[in-house]
Length: 212
Ligand SMILES: [Zn+2]
Image (cartoon, rainbow, N blue to C red; front, top):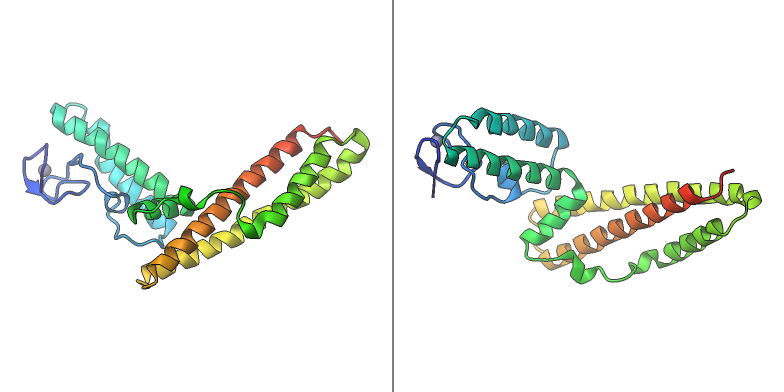
């Protein structure tokens, strides 16, 4: 139980006081901060709606002349709410947070290139090397090849994210193979992380390539 800094009522930890509606300023898991059950499949519009609605109710401007404890609670709860929204709206950071909640970490499983990407990564790096060393004459053609690669990567990220959504749905169904779901989630997340890094490398190489 916690005590509301505004009306002194005691209640279960939550974002706002059930009695007076003031922010409680207590730490919560990021789903609870948004008043959501711990489910991975989220409707982005609902998430945004909850964020804005709660954000208005607990906004520090509304507590500017309140006693220090209530003002502090407003600042703390607003920071928590913002962190919850930013973490949960992106499926990749939501997945990473889920691993954390389950006592797992991506880093343990994130060393080196994922096996299924090894060939692609090798090819792309080779093309980027050629593009960097290209003279004006051949740069245009190489640039076009690399830009096509960039589009391919984009599509691959989208497809991998669909795999992530399927993994989320299985968690929500209460699938029993927890170990398998953790392993799959880690693998999908590290694939996406790697593809994003590769896409950034491609962007950089394209930016610094000789002009056509
Ligand atoms: Zn209260």
